[in-house]
Amino acid sequence: MATTHHTTATTHGTTLHTTHGAVAHHEHGTMDSSAQQRTFEGFVRFMTWSAVLTILVLVFLALTNA
Image 1 (cartoon, rainbow, N blue to C red):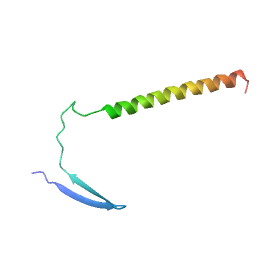
Image 2 (image 1 turned 90 degrees about the horizontal axis):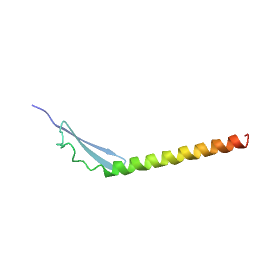
Image 3 (image 1 turned 45 degrees about the vertical axis):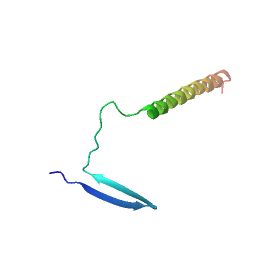
């Protein structure tokens, strides 16, 4: 028989309740991942612009013999 433990902790005025041993039911493919997709798209956009800016700075430095 599985045992479930409940823990309550207070940190900086915030009470945290955790349950150990209890597993929530999850059905594969039902999670809304739109927030993760937007975050990843923003990350890719940021890294693309960072790479372009870095290349432009390097080209400028090469052309000015810096």
